Amino acid sequence: LIPAQQELNRLNEEAARKAVERAAAEKSLADVNRDLDRSYEGLRDKLEDIERARDRGSINAVDAVREEAAAYREYQAEVKAAIEQLEKLQARQTDPSIRAEIQESIEEYQDSLEEAAEDSGRRSRELAAAAVQDIRGPFDELFEGLIQGTTSASEAFANFFQGLADIAARTAAQLATNAIFAAIIGAAGGPAG
Image (cartoon, rainbow, N blue to C red; front, side, top):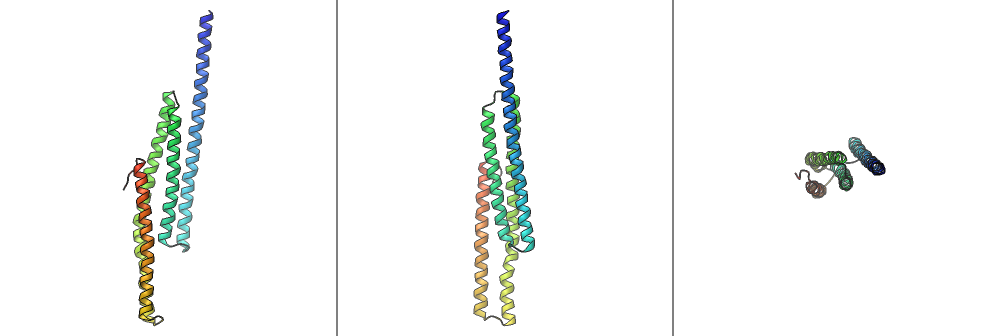
């Protein structure tokens, strides 16, 4: 009877340990999910704020896209950190069902990285369209100044070329930023295009 009681005690202790392990893993998983939900909401809030500023004319289209790219990079870094955290949590688990739950979350977050890369790509295309619109400004100023006679031809052309140079610099910086972001996403397992 004593060996049976000892075995029963051992099984009870093992069940209790597994229950504690499961509860701790579920709490950690819930914490990561909650934090990433907040990060995603923060991303959406930033994008909405940028869009409102753009609509008000507080920032130009190129700067808006630059700020959006920064918001995506920040979100992407938070997702990568969460994936790393989940991978560590998963490695410590002995219960296959907990490991499977964690793997599902990891896959969801990898999908989130892919979506962020797609959004960034879409915004890059919008950047090109915005740059075309921005180029109109220097052209308009050139012809307006010449037609109205408010500037000399040399002054109008100097302003025109300076405006184009400013646009080219902003556009090049944004395209480089997007290329780096796409490469980082690609290295994380998402699309690199």
